[in-house]
Image (cartoon, rainbow, N blue to C red; front, side, top):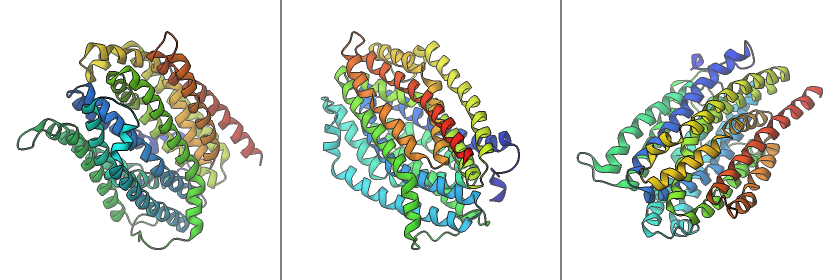
Length: 452
């Protein structure tokens, strides 16, 4: 286990960040491929199937608010405890987070399965076939969301202690599983029946279970003193102060993620007025954007652990230097994605859609949102850095206010001659503003911390 962990408080900053970030970014890229693989196969069933999965997937996304509470609460507290040299405390924060994860997973599953009809009805899809697709996908993926929850939180704990290689290994195994099961279960190959959207949901859940299992096995195999997961007695009682610590850091992140998802649901409801094709484009567009989003989020996770450990060790200058290096790297990546979206929208769209009208909508989407990719990457990376300093409340305030501004802006622009394009422009403009504001916020916070 020790040879998988990276020392974040000593040695060359670039080497430490790259050693931790590369496996996380690779894992994020695999998650992107994982999602795009689903969409590519589902796309063969038509835009109604894609729209149905998109709506059902919205609730999977909404559920991540609860898991992000436990993940961020674990990752920041565990990493800061490591930086202070308090491994016992780190283990208690990890145990508290995992216990909360189990509770949240069961509660969300019960609500999703019991109220699936009403949850889908909120989107006013209007098409019976699309509604059936959405209900089926929602009940299966959210009903067994515990596998995804455990994977997310375990990844945060592994990352906090400097091990990003075990989650990478788990994601590789999960991706292979998903790529094999998707065509087999969706289209019905060999002895398997054609299950279409239901098959896609089952393939996703099985792959998530495999990822979780690999991470758990990795915890049992690594029993060094720096591996707080090794030999952990999960259900052992935990002192209340550790739960409070998890909630203190995690609640703002959970609120931020949940509100962001609710806002996206409102926007999806607006997009639905333009038909199932527009909803499908929004869903697939989000998956394609994950090429930049997941990579930036992966780098943010590495920077979060780096920042938290060095903050715990009292090394603020090292924190600032790490941020500058990360900033330059992520801006280059986001700019490359912008070029791809703006210059090659037709080629990208035709991978997922086969109806000319829907391809046209997708081309508009990619060209417009492509402008903001670098800003979005910077936003996500900076959120990771600020959260590592324990400033999750500040991140939540900025994100909620300016993401919320998308709704009135989208209403105004959609009512103009821009129509559907106006909604895409609302997404882009808000992302640009948030990217700029988060950079200014990080600079202000670190200057204040350094002067204390």
